[in-house]
Length: 101
Image (cartoon, rainbow, N blue to C red; front, side, top):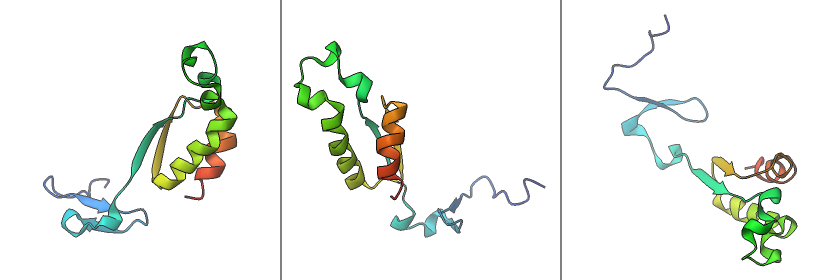
């Protein structure tokens, strides 16, 4: 039963975000998916001796987080993969800012 809708091995069915199926030949630029991976160097990672070569104004989380959000919003990605983000940074900064996208 599970395989009744499975296409032949040389066919591929594309399903867009709305659940509409199409063949690869019918796919358009509207069917694209933009994935961005970003190392945000979260609050607890950026402040300390490891990055003491950079100015404190650059590594300070409160100075950086708004610039990071602004840049990420401009990227307008469908999926963001964030590295070195703290739980607080994710929940307090990135989720509220990026959820409307």
